[in-house]
Image (cartoon, rainbow, N blue to C red):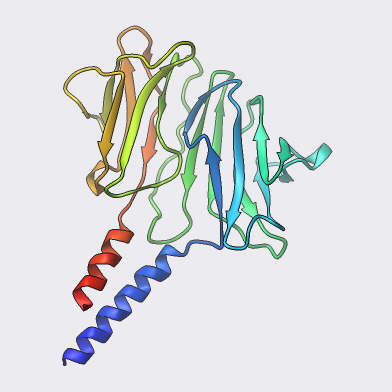
Length: 234
């Protein structure tokens, strides 16, 4: 019976490890943020176990698939292995990395609202990471944006949030998660030691400039779970 229990635990660990392998390649957003003011420079990079050779950044805006740096039917420009956007146009679309054999990374939805801000939402394809999130199209008159990671963060890591004005440094603001205040008073920057309960919809609000768009922070806890599983077996 003891042997069977150990085998079952090993099986669970194998499943957890398998679930972590989303794709041989991933799409990296730099800077790792979800919201930007118009004119910001943002790069999308394909990174994988075998390097970036043979992979390119693609998008679908609803009128067909386009490749980065492909001329008339393309968008952006390549510099090394990265696709750069220097000036954002009001075009929304789904972005991903794709290999020569048709392999795909997770997708990133880039939503452009007017000429003021854009919003990145990571849409994960692995079943263990998937979270249903409605795409949020916000008004174009926002004067502050929330600086929050675009990519999922690991449980136990520190995440810094700030409420940024278009000019100048961070604004003193109240920060909210799922409708509840994160701190009892306004602050320029806050740091959270992320736990699973911190996953949710965040925004900031400044008395003078109003509220930012809302962005969803995703938390990965699988690594900790696997460590605990292995400790149990040992």
